[in-house]
Image 1: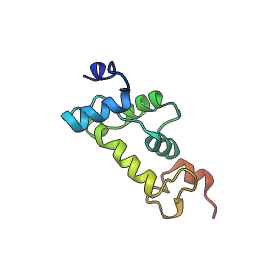
Image 2: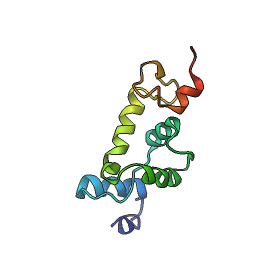
Image 3: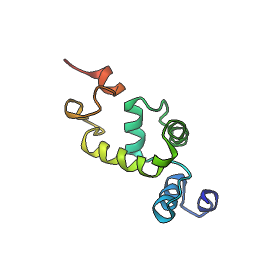
Image 4: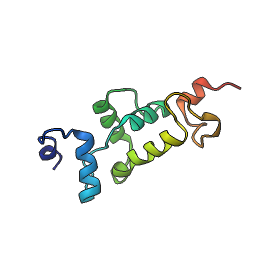
Length: 107
């Protein structure tokens, strides 16, 4: 259980969610790292930058069957297209759905 894991020293929700999913194929939540937080915020999926709030907002809109892999999708997308300092919006396949791109697009 996630409650048991987060009682361990140095284990927070992010680590607990990763261990549960990849170790036991159980989804108790969504692991929110910097990529997951940044990309989800830029896409307009969440309104907070606080990892706990981001997790709750995402859990409300992402189907539970995708919780375990959602973070990996966001990490890959964040490293490939949605870079922290200079996002590659022009070549991003989500650019027409992305709040950040739609707000900052330079035509």
